[in-house]
Image (tube, rainbow, N blue to C red):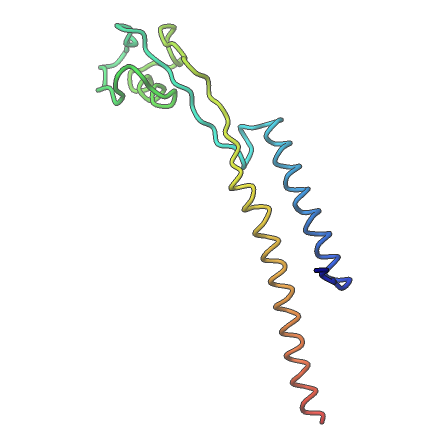
Length: 143
């Protein structure tokens, strides 16, 4: 089965393909050059562990620990250390088990690539339908 497109539809198909290529190029460039600033990347924090008996020495009264079993995310540890009075970050006794890693969000990329194209196609066909409908109203009056 062969689908025949007119010239305007062919232009629309070419523009849609160029849009997909543009979005994929931007996403991959951002991912490889600056993943921390990319809209298509989720940063998953690594795990850290306090070595046994090595609770950081605090300059203020020690707040209650909000984490369990010596495992803590870096953000939670920074909050804890800030409450304790540490200014210069984590002490030497903090062991980083896994570094932060980046997760590419294909669903978000697909949404950003597909939805604008679908909206544009629907808007164009809606405008064409409205223009034909309005012109048909003028044609019926002239007869």
